[in-house]
Every structure is written in C-alpha cells, then in structure tokens.
Image 1 (cartoon, helix red, strand yellow):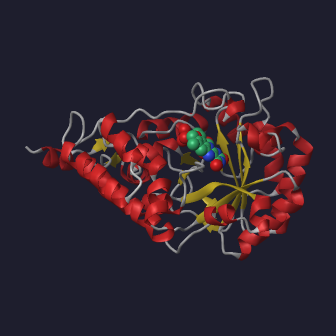
Image 2 (cartoon, protein in one colour; image 1 turned 45 degrees about the vertical axis):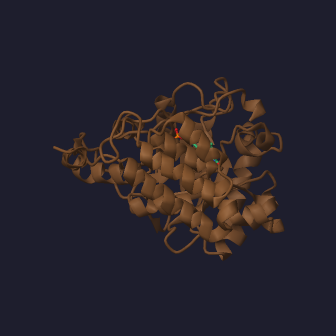
Image 3 (tube, helix red, strand yellow; image 1 turned 135 degrees about the vertical axis):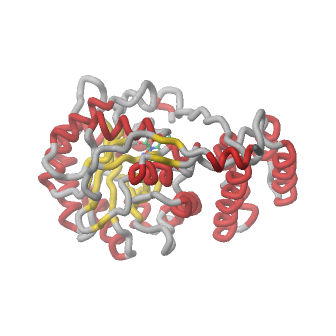
Length: 369
Ligand SMILES: Cc1cc2nc3c(=O)[nH]c(=O)nc-3n(C[C@H](O)[C@H](O)[C@H](O)COP(=O)(O)O)c2cc1C
C-alpha cells in the first residue's frame, strides 16, 4: 500500500467525552467547544482563516490589543482587529489598566461588529505587567473586579476574561476572581493553568483549573494549557470538568486539531492531521491571504514566524528552513520553497503520516520577554 493510501485508511479512536450542553457566551452560541487561544504574533486574520477553513473552531480570538492604541486609531492596533465574514464568531482581546479606556475600546469594538470582547489578565510579559495590565491585574482584586463590572455594563456583546491561576504559587487567586466575575456578569472565563511566575514552564495544573470550575455556579469555564492531542483534551475535560477547551501552540503545530477535536467529540474517532503536501498547500494559502493584504515584500517578512512552525511541522531539514527565513524577495522565497518541495520531509514521505513535532515554549525569565 502507498503511504497516501495508508494514511487515508487511518482513523484514530479515543473514548468520547461525557456529554455536555452546547457552549454559549450569553446569547452567542458557539458551534463547538474548541477555541483558538490568542497567540501574539500568530493569531492574525490569515491564520484564523486557515484554522476555520479546516473546521471545528468554536471561536477565535485576536492577539492582545492595546485598548489605548485602539482609541488612538493606532495602525498596529487596527491591523490586529482586521476581520472578514468567514472569521466568525470573532473575539478581540484587549489589555489596559484604565477602566475608561477599556470601556471605550469595548464600545468601539461593539460598534465595529465584533462578537465578543475578552480581557487579558494572563500576559506575564514585563512590558505589559509593569503598566498594570495583563497578569498584574490579578494583584489588585477590587480594582480589577470593578473594571470588569464596568466593562460588562458598557456593552451588549459578551465580555469574557482570560487569566492565570494567580501571580505566583503563594497567591492562587483565580477561584476568587472567577466567583466575582460571575457575579459581575461575564459570559465566560478562560483559565490557563499556570501562575504568572511560571511563565510557560512546567506543566499545566489541571487541579488548579478544576478549582476555578468548582468556584462558579453556571458561567462557562474554558480550560487552557498544553493541549496538543485528543488525549490531552480528553484529560482536560475529564479532570477539570471545564465546559470548553482553548488551544494555542497546539494549533500552530497542528492546524487540524479543532477538526479532530470536533470529530472526536461527535464520533469517538478522528482522522490524522495533514501530510507534508497538505501543510505546504495550507502554508501557501495562508501566505496568499497575507500577500493580498500587505503586498509581496511585507508578506514575506511577516510570514517568517509562521513559516517556521509550518516547516518544523513538515519535518524540513534545518538548512532549508534557514534558507527560507533569509528570503527577502519573491524569487528567493520561491527558490527556497522549490528546494523544500524537492527534498521532502526528513525520514518520511510527502503524502504519508508525519511524526508529531515537538512544541516549544517561550523560555527565559519572564521579566525579559
Ligand atoms: C507566543 C505566544 C503568544 C501569546 N499571546 C497571548 C496573547 O496575546 N493573549 C493571551 O491571553 N495569551 C497569550 N498567550 C498564551 C496562550 O493563549 C495560552 O494561554 C498558552 O500558550 C497556554 O496554552 P497552549 O499550551 O495551548 O499554548 C501566548 C502564548 C504564546 C506562546
């Protein structure tokens, strides 16, 4: 049997999760409980379109966007909230510490037709926390709860929050925040099962997420962290009892993961992710979306970060990946891709199963990110 035929025969099985009610953010009903987690630098419109086209995404959120930047009409902030009819339902994540700015930014987003607004309370990066935003909001309980309550009051669209377990292991405040946010009227709470101090190190604390689920009465809780495979998602749902799961880095390594999750939930079976050739096609489609908006030269530079993930997933030799990263013109870009196509994956076929890729984490002291 050819590698291609072999791959098409393959269907994995895993016991289905317990039945849960459909997931909704207030009046906004989501098609699936599998959501794309915000990843600054990656979850731009071209990538969101790609994962949506592959299927299974219940909701996608932008990278974090500076509320003040939005109000000033900052070009970069406006670029981050670009969307299109296929990019639906669509949430924008905002950060900031000034309640007035945050409410005005949420109103602006509502007026532009955004379906939901998410508040970033998890970003550990010093540049963000020093200004009183991101994870540092977890150090000022009263102010933060009052900001979120004002935000909920200022718009009709659902407001959600995304937080960590707490600032550090001595301050696990997420369950208390969750209880307060539910009272304030948020439509959902996403929880990344690490503290700010942990950054991305160690493994996600599923018991910590469970305590957040137990702290609330009925608001949906979205479990997040380290979900890269169906068994990871099954564990997240089973151990924490969460209502939905959001996937970040796992979607960069495997953009088919939402389709797999949805198939698995419905049938207990799911197909493998794409091959070298499928990934190459996807990569070119995503590049095409970028090029449409920003022109060839800008798109080549903007695509480098994302290209790195695609090429790693395609098992491309390091020297060829490096060559791709150096391309500045369309001719160099095409020549690098021709070589990549010619060489195929390391130790595999173009049309067969590829080994799972190692999913890296941002490393180094949180202070220096
Ligand atoms: C490169 C990178 C950028 C991120 N950007 C954001 C962001 O803008 N907003 C946010 O709430 N979380 C952000 N996160 C955190 C992710 O949304 C997610 O909580 C975390 O990566 C754990 O989930 P995962 O294991 O599925 O990736 C980022 C993470 C990474 C690795």
